[in-house]
Amino acid sequence: ALLMMLQKGESGKKEGLQSLQAFNQQLLEHGLEVVQYRTAYLNQLQELLRKKQHLFFDSDLNLSLELSSSFQAGKKELQQKLDEIANREIIRGTCLIGVHRDEIRMMLNGKELRKYGSSGQHRAFLLLLLLAQLELYEQWREDRPILLLDDLDSELDQRKIQSFFHEIENRYQTLISSSRRELFQGNGNMRFFGINSGRVLEM
Image (cartoon, rainbow, N blue to C red; front, side):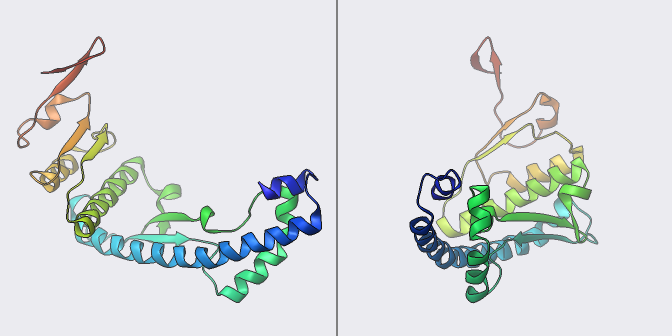
């Protein structure tokens, strides 16, 4: 908001820059801590991805997660960068660097999945990542979350779907939406519901 005010000339530049420096100092201190926590979390997810990779991917493929952050540098270097881009941020009316702009890149054999992966690989990687997140949550909270999935069979073949069912069976209370009931036959203790004229009915 301060940058937008400075961009529009609604705040004095000298006073605005002083306030901006104060905000940047907090962004720097807390941002570096956030990056440390995110990196540690991704390392744990990475380990679980490798353990569960066989569910959806061949063992010779290399799956990895990378944190893309403008705050992966030393405090002094980042402070200098924040000072250097202050005028550019005022012109743009927005922050140009910071942990709020971080991205997590999903990688397959060293290539970014978003750019080079197939739609099936996207779906399989995301489900694998979800399973890893569920396991970490369970370890930390000593409780099992409820799993919600929309259109599970999209872009997945039958083998991958069955592998997924086997992984969650009798472990998580799960709600899955699909238009193909036949995919779920013979997969543990399941109940089926349909929507008819706006009403949810057990089938």
